[in-house]
Amino acid sequence: MFTSVWTPLGGKVADRWAGLLTSPVMVLWGGGLLAWVHGHGGLTGTGSGWKELERQWRTAFPEPAAQVALLVGALLVVLASARLLENLTLPVVRLLEGYWPRWAWPISAALTWMRGRRIERAARRWRDLALRRDELTARERLRFSRLDAGRAAVPAVPDLRMPTALGDLLRATELRIRLRYGLDAVACWPRLWILLPEQARADIGQARARLDEMARLWAVGVALAGFTILTWWALLAAAVVAAVAHRLLRSAAADYAIMLQSCFDLHRRMLYEAVDLPWETRAEPEGGQRITAFLTRGTALTVAGEG
Image (tube, rainbow, N blue to C red):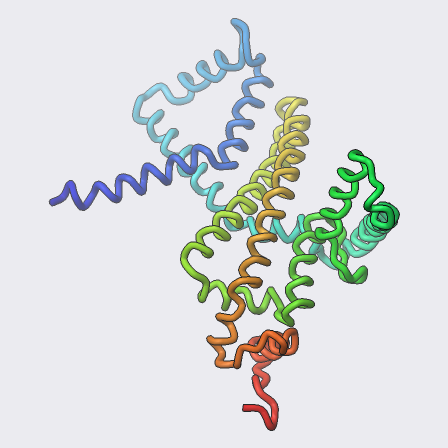
C-alpha cells in the first residue's frame, strides 16, 4: 500500500529535480562555479582552481556532517533562486517587450523612432517588389517573402509601435485580433483560456512555457555578468548567453503569437456563447467590441431594440 502511495510522489520529485538540472538557473550557478575556478588558478593544470576548491573545501569543512550540511544548503539556494527566477519571468518579458518606467521614456522614444525608420525602409522595399511581383527573380522572391513576414511582426498603426522587436511582434498580434474581431486580447484572453478545448490549452501552454524559459535564460545571461569580478570571460559568456537567449526568445514569441491568434480565429465563438450574445459573423467587429466593453467596464451586451 505504502509503495503505491509513494511511487507517484517519487516520480514527481524526480521530475522536479530533472527539470531543475536543465533549467536556466543551473547555467547561472554552473557559470559562477567555473568563473570561481578560473579565477583561482584556471580550469586545467596541476595548479588549477579545482585543486584550490578541493583544498578550501577540506579546510573549511573537515567533518562529513558539515559537508553534507553545506551541500543541502547549496541545494536550497539553487531551489530558492529557481523560484525567484520563475517569479521574475513576467517582469523580464515586459522589460524585453519595451514596457519601461517613465524615466526611460526618452530612450524608449528614441528606439521606437529608429525602429520606425527601419520599418518604413522595409515597407518601401516591400512595395517596390510587390509592384513587379510577377517579374521577380528567385533571390528577389526570397527577399519579398522575408519582408512580407516582417510586416506581420509590426503593428499596422505606427503610433502603437514598441521600442523592441519582441514588443512589436506581440502587440501586432493583439492589434490584428482587435481590428478583425473587435476583441481586446488582453481583456478577453483569460476568459477564452477557460473555455478552450484541452488540446488547444496544452499547445498554447507549451508555446508560452518556451517563451518564458527563454526569457529566464536571457535574465541568467545578464546575471552572469556579475561574475566578471572573478574572471574577465564571465562578461563574454554573459553576452553570448543573453544574445542566444534573445534570438531563441524571438522564435518562441513568434510561435506563441501564431497560437494566440489561432485560438481567437477558431474558438472566439465560445466567448459569444459564454456571455449569451448571439453569434453573427457579419456583426464583427461590433460584436467583439461589445464583449470587450462588457468584460472591462460592465457595459450592457445589447442595446435598445435588440433581442
